[in-house]
Image: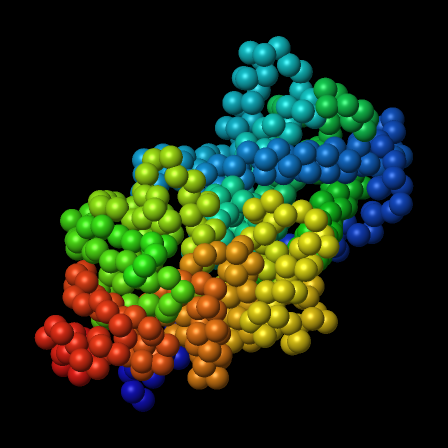
Length: 283
Length: 253
């Protein structure tokens, strides 16, 4: 057989195998969580806070962590979008191409992206000590927002970079200024991409244990205000998994299942919202 | 000409970095006529349009010298309101780019930006300009549907309506039919001829046949220089300059 044909076949098979591995990993993860966690899932688990002796197999659930994580994830995404959107709009629409500030900002995002979450957590803790703050929902939100900031900014940056320049030109031609063009045209056109960025960032944020360990704390109560500490699902998983009791270990998988399901539900919700608002975009 | 033309340039020079794109252009665009600028690709004719509505501000490393007078004010003066200049100079691009919104909102986009908020008034404007480009009958029952769902030809007419809705004084077209099918092209050409009774029109093209069909005046730009400018019949049929002659005969491009 011709060498080029063998070569072609070899690499095709290699690509298929790689794709199968990727899908396999996902199936394995989901499978493990479902098989191990589903039996311990019940209504109590998602509607109750831990009661006395919960971590020794007693009654109760992880509602504290579910709500804590949800508040943290949503709060952090909102805060992070509020910071990253202006930055990204600035570097894409206002800043000069190849200017120092533009390149430097992108460089900062890339570096920040590579910083491990535990470093953010430690940084947040040091900052809190300095300010005399206690672990709280607010501190957690701020640190998670910083963790997902580079992810959000860089993803939104890519999306906005890909908006056809003619679209802005069409808007300018009609007499619109940069702000009008940015808000009414560019953001609208980038909405699907921004939604994807938000979903990814939310997943990153809500699943992060290291950054909230020091900053949000952990509690058996549902957070009542921004200044009260908040439990999170990743930490709930962590604590339960380290229990010697089999039954509590299973609850760790159940909590993992709940976390995954929450991310999935948010994913679907955001996509639905996106569908409603982006019917007009140019394909 | 017994009146002052809308647009005049005096010794206009444009540089991109070290590249001298437009050289000493002095010209007056006749009012209420179609002026077609011809010339090979890259000769600077699109740059000329960009100068007229100051879209050139968006490009970097550009230096402009000389004067561009629109209604006797130098549009490169410091005090000028760019938004007002752009409103005055409608531009039809090569490829239609509807904004990411409904058909209605596309036409209403300009008027809204320039301060018209009243819904009834907006409806009137949208209807008027969609009718002006013969699109009303086709879309009147689906004004709220995405503009991107229209065909390419319809999109270009929509872009025309969108441009007219801000009530410009001058219409510019940068090869406005280059991406359209023959029928849609013909429509745009017919429309331009119709519109010249109210507007001064400048069209950039490298299609000589299009120039023959619609031009009242023709300017020929070659390597950044305005080689010849005059009535269409003269420039296209009996050019005074040898370069123009060669271009029209297809010897240089």
